[in-house]
Length: 116
Image (cartoon, rainbow, N blue to C red; front, side, top):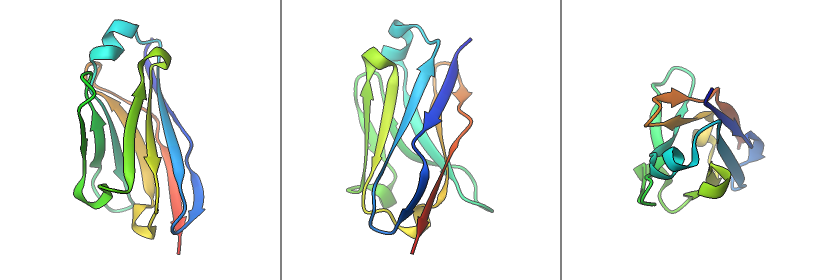
């Protein structure tokens, strides 16, 4: 059974950094290598929105409000996608989810809280 497992959330002050991890547990390596994995977030009262995506060809895309602050990367051997978040702002506070495009599968989410 394939599961997307996020970790790395927490409480940080504005200007701080966090690194989130998303492991595709149980996914065949060849599938992961070609999969587009995305990070999304949802703040209370808001719709879920895309933060960053990484394709199997290592193409990356970012939401405008995180460009220059967040970096998505992947370690295929570990079946893991990372989201390095720097210069965090209070408006980045949300539950962050990862998503497998091939399996159409969401993780359970990890809370990120940025205090001012």
